[in-house]
Image: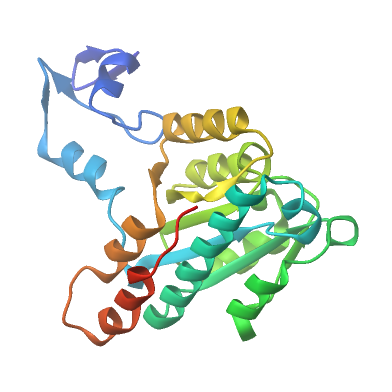
Length: 232
């Protein structure tokens, strides 16, 4: 139960309005939200290139080969689109690798797309945030909105997202760039992340949210990337 301004509400009532009750207190009475709470709720759905970071979790060779081939291919293609878009809009990219000695490094196509931005943070913890080197690097960026891609959705991605949410970040999980060996795990992970407060989105939604408008140089570079997009 939440008690604010002498109004008693349940979490179920708050969740009806998609309010993140783990991070904020909500004042709801007879289906009415005060302006401040509405703003907080809606604000998490936005993306701004000046305040965003792209987190690429564990796209490693020995993990990639365990994924269903067509699913992984789509993920990798979409990651490539996001990397190119981030480069154009000057959105930083953070790369992690889980026990690279055993699971290999980031796959070559993504390495090539990253160019000089390929500076992986090696970790042993499933959650990125539980790694001190990651925390140190991530905090220096001073960005509030985190776009997340990675393998596997129900392990490292899920645990990282939950801990980032706990730290107060607005997390956008790009659903067509995360995968698991089994579809049931992927679907359940997306549901859990949404329930925890993450925004579940797609590559095209995220990139065009970052752009915000047409008629700018960035739009002219990025828009053609999506015209010939192939979905298998």
